[in-house]
Length: 155
Image (cartoon, rainbow, N blue to C red):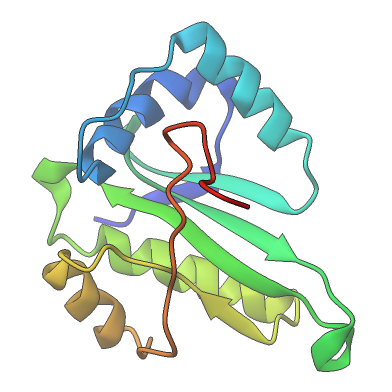
């Protein structure tokens, strides 16, 4: 059962919003479909951002984003962040996440990126084992400044 991995389109946005709920550690405010579509079109026009879906039998069963970051360091090669990796709950454990991540790795190799990074909430131990099983390793620290309250504190 191999999913088709393709670039997301506007018709996928409602399904994506449903999948993203699985990522929430704490409940987040809902975004309207209209607002989500506007955001999607902004992302779609960004040449450094790619939003993918994994599809089985015309049903979206997973998604992830790749954000390519150009730079002058590391021989002027891009780095890449994989973000918002999620597989539908009923499809978890079927190898879909592994296929999505292998696709992401191949896209980075094809683009000559010097690294692929991700962050994962400290409590998602199953996800950590999944990423480590794919060859990712813990590297450094990840810091978060929560801006959801609308303030960065004292800057």
